[in-house]
Structures are given as C-alpha cells and as structure tokens.
Amino acid sequence: MNCNSPSWRLCVLTLVLAIASPIAYGADSQLAPIRITPERRQLIGLKFATVVRKDVSDRLDTTGNIEADERLQGYVQTRFAGWIEKVFANSTYQYVRRGQPLFTIYSPDLMSTESEYLLAIEARKRVKDSTVGDVTTDATSLVDSAAERLKLWGVSPREIARLERERTGRRAVEIDSPMSGYIVERNALPNMYVQPDTRLFTITDLSKVWIYAAVFQNEIGKVRPGNPATVTVDAYPGTNFDGRVDFIQPQIDLMTRSAKVRCEFNNPKGQLLPGMFAHVALDLPMGEQTVIPDTAVLSTGTHNVAFIDRGDGYLTPAEIELGPHVGDEFIVLKGLAPGQQIVSSANFLIDSESQLQAAAGAFVPPPPGVGANAAGLPIEAIPQASIEFASDPNPLVRGHNKAIVTVRDSKGAPISGAQATVSFYMAAMPAMGMAAMHTQGTADDQGNGTYAANIDLPSGGTWSLTITVSKEGHPIATKQMDVSASGSMAM
Image 1 (cartoon, rainbow, N blue to C red):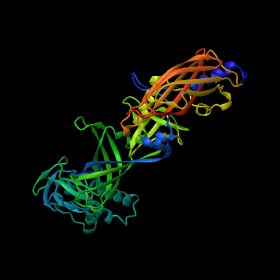
Image 2 (tube, one colour):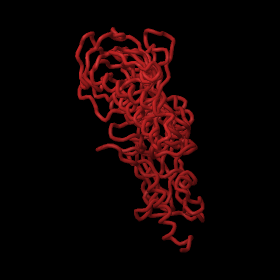
Image 3 (cartoon, rainbow, N blue to C red):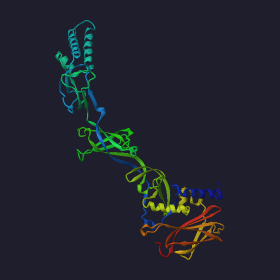
Image 4 (cartoon, rainbow, N blue to C red):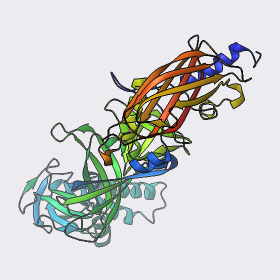
C-alpha cells in the first residue's frame, strides 16, 4: 500500500483517534484524557509514581489455637487377654519414653507361649552336638518360631532376651511404651481384666505441634502450603517460634467466613502446649509482580482506573485489572506496563476534570508525537493541518470575546468548508472554593480558512484551550494550548 495515499492516512488517523478516545466506566459517565499545566499541577498537589516490577510478599496477621500433631499420637493395647497387676505409668500427662515399662500383666496364654520358647531353647541345647542331619537345624527353627510368636504378641525384645538368659518364665510380663510422649488418656488400673480391644493408654508426642490459624475467605487465595509462619504466645513474650503452613482445610466456617490453615511447628522444649491461644503471622511470597501505589487507583465500584502521564502535561485514563492489595500497593494484572508514569495523588480532581472533558466532547488526540507514540506509529505517518489562534480583544478578557481560528494545510494553503470548535476549560481550585468551568463554541466559516466564534469567559486566569477542526466528518487538525484572560477570578 502507498503510505502517501489518502486512504492510508485516514486509516492511521482513525487508529490514533480510537486509541485516544474516552473510555466509559459507568452507566452515564466517561473519562477522557486531559492536559494539566505545571501551574495547575502544583496548585492541586499532583504527584506521580512509576509502575514497577518487583518481588512481592505480603504478611497476614491472625490468631490460632495450638493442637497436638495427630500423626504423633498412639494407643497402648495388648494383643492377648489377661489381668493387669502393677501400673508404673499411673497419672495423666506423665511423660514416658519409648521402651519404658508401663504396667505388668498376667496372661495364661502368654505364659504358655513363654514355656514353649524355653522348651525349644532347652531342646536346641541338647541336640547342638548331634551328628544326625537336620536335627540341630530343626531345633533352631523351633526356637525362632516360639520367639516370633512372642514378638507378635507384643512381648518386648528385652523380655525375650531375659527369657533366653535366665531360662525362667515370669508370672507377670512388663509391657513397654511403644513411643515417647505424654499420656493424655489412661485407663489401665491394677487388677483390671483387659482384652485386645481395650485401650489402656493414649500417648501424644509434643515434639511437633499444629496451630490452626483462622484466615478470612477474601485472603485465603494468598496462602500456599509451605509458606513461612511465625508464632508468639503470651506465655513467652519476645520469643518467636518458626514454622510453615502444612495444610489448608477445604471448608469455610459459615459463622466466621474463615478457613482453618494448619501450620506445623517444632516444639523441642515443649513450650507450645495444646489449647494455647497464639498470634500467627504468615509470610506470603507472591513472586515477581507489577505493582502500583494504592493511591494511584481510582475505583468506581465496577471499574478501576489509573491516569498515565504521556508527557507535556497530558494524562490519559486506562482501565486496569487489579490483583491482591499488598501493604500500600496493588498488584496490577492488566492495563499497565512497568516503567510507565502514573498519577499517584489528587486522582479525584483528575477524575472530575476528565469527566467534564468527556461530557463536553472537548478532548481530541494530543499533539503530534503523543498519540503516535502511544499507538506505536511513526510521527511522519500522521497527516496534520496547522491551526493558528487569535482573539479579539487580545489578550482575552473576562466576559465577551471573539475567538479567531485560521486553518491551513501542510503546504500553507487555507482550508475552507470545515467545521471548527473551540473549547475553554479551567480546572477546579478547591483551595479557592472555585469549581471547574467549561465553555464551548462553534466557529463560523469566514472564508479564506478563517473561522470565528463568540465566547463568554466567566473568569479571568489561565484557561486550557482545545481547538478541533474536521471536514466531511473526519478530524483533520487539533490543537491544545494555554491562554490567559485578564480580569478578576470567578468566586
């Protein structure tokens, strides 16, 4: 396609206009790009921030309760029936170690098996020097089988070693603890008859504990298994206990609208006790994200908007999609790119001014270079006519004025038969109690490329002037500039 052809130029201009067109963000409202002069920027306290890409982490402070690790709990039961004679572990919450005797039990079945074991040992001793084949092997097999039956019935290796060493049985056999921990349930009593289904002790190892932290449903999406967790308890002020998130329960409590997040903590000194109330801090690394200050977001209830600095005082609105709120920043999912400059303060004033511009239809694409760069197009590819502005009286005054616009093409020839609009805008000045002002007029064709419009300015001061020229329904030129009007300020 010929880049100098009228159709190509019209396509390029249409693309730039589409990029710079106002964006709708409500049922009856729009936002349009605007231009803020340095003086007005200072007056309203306008500040800017840079969109950055960085590693983001959040911190969630909540509360929780300490509970025993269910994976470190165990029961003590016998594998045979019998009568308990002595109980050594005779109190709840007594600490016992693995292999420590808990009680003694008399069982006729167990005594019979021990006697078989002793007979097998004696038989092996008598035939150990036999020359008859397989006799010694068979005797050893009988000993191993009897020892294996004792092990299957839960007799400790210590008791089996004693039987082999002393060659005498005992009326009552000691039953050892299968694990180290605290006795949290005790049912073993002297002279008690027990069967294999009788639960005699429940032992809990507190070397590791669980803490169930309550996390509200709007924040549960930030939490992941493996996230670091820190706990403090009132019993040990100034002491931090480090752990990690172990599991997130897939259930929301209907009353509190929170989920339980299970955190695992080492507890070598036993300081964290089941039932304690704890303060939990979850560190939530979120990886590398694009972030902006939360003050840079204008929320309308249904949309989120940020104003991008295009240079030379031009601000354009951009609808953005936000992620989680982290500290005093928002994660941006769509709508902004790292390195862009955005408005970070006085957004409500910029919003008001932008709505007025959009409602009045005053905005047109920025001067050459601003819109083109935003669209990624070369400046020379965008056709431009030149606009000259004059006024009667000159300079402008508060009250009645005549705005005179002269339009020429790229070769300097006057352009007639076009439609020209002049729009004057002054931003609100809250410090002076002055609202935003806007006035607009259509310039009549005076011939020879000159157009004139009668304009009444309600105030003296600096006005933002926007001139739009179109022909046959297509914009051909635009100009934005600041002009001064003599006279007192409107109050």
